[in-house]
Amino acid sequence: MTGNGHGATLAEKILARASGLEKVVPGQIVDGRVDLAMMHEQGAQTVGPFHEMGAKKVWDPDRVVIAIDHWVPASTEGAAVLHRILRKFAEEQHLPHFYDVGRHGICHQILAEDGWVVQGDLAVGTDSHTNMLGAMGAVAAGIGPTEMAAVLALGRIWLKVPPTVHVRVRGTLGPGVTAKDLVLRVLGEIKTTGATYKAVEFSGPTIERLSMPERFTLCNMTTEMGAKCGMIAPDATTADFLRPIAKHAAHPVHADADAQYERLVEIDVDGMPPMVACPYSPDNVRPLPEVAREHIKVDQVFLGSCTNARIEDLREGAAVLRGHKVAPGVRFIVSPASTKIYQQALDEGLIKEYTEAGAVFTNSSCSACFGGNMGILAPDEVCASSSNRNFPGRMGAKNARIYLLSPAATVASAILGEVADHRSLN
Image 1: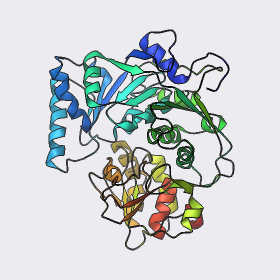
Image 2: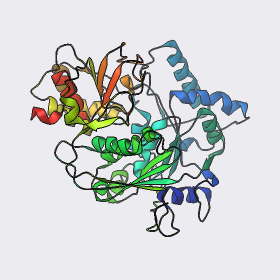
Image 3: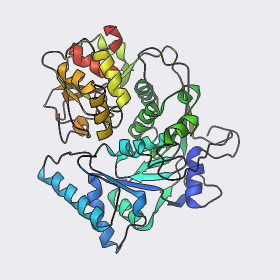
Image 4: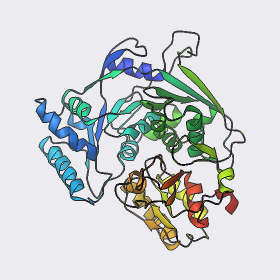
């Protein structure tokens, strides 16, 4: 354990508040009051158990958000059935916060941009990347459909308090080096099982300088570390972001100076190059310049996902793309994270820039990220992607190879037709 005192971590403070307890410790079982519950298509599997356990009404319709995001519009009969189940449930339960086709988007992005999760919340969702919302200074965790059924009925959840891995970051990110590069670097240190059922708490001067979109990217990929939740303490940046959009009152808390952490990981980003996660694991991380020298040809490029498809990411990519074309033989798919972002991209002329360069700009959805909708890879194909996972079969064929990059490096790969360091285009 690190730390010399008996103070509480950020996760412990939040779970204590949610459970009505003065203090909690790792390994303790608590019964926490949920501030926000989110479901996407997997939430359709919640409806049966909800009724089977005898539940009649959702505990608080104003604290439930449903978002259609994986198959939008429905691309298979199975997806259409899932959508219908959710629509019927929302109608029966009088759930007002249903993001159906036309105002849809990736569930985590919708929760972020519409202020559904605020400082100090305990939030749960039927998707593993719910961790992203921990950037608000909240405990946000993915749960299964049966657990969600109980949450919908009771507004509470049984949880084991996780130990916390403290990631302290110092230094200045160099030109062309982003939050995505930082989280890949951290993944290379912690590995995909190094934070299993643990909280990952980011701190340090580098973190304090990050924007909210950059913080979302960091917390999003704590899922790839196996973490129960990823989080950043709330500060003025958090408050400024949430002030105009927050859907309910905040209750910010901070870790004690003498908090007890299971492990401390210290990262110095001074001089750090862009990073890339190579097949077949997000923790198979190498410096991008080194990989770029191998001239690995790509068949497809994907700029999207809950990790990196915000308007800032699309702008970052467009800045690299300007004056270039997509390389012959490369399929370049761009999928914004929400309908609001799509509209912003339209207003700013970004869609025109991407499509005129040879990209396909889709509606907002999970898109190619999960290998179940658009942009599925054939055997032996190679994809450069701004998404979060590159396990075998993640985007289609099991032996397709996926390289995880920042948005800028992803776009550079589309231009050069190979895994590329975007800084080489300057």
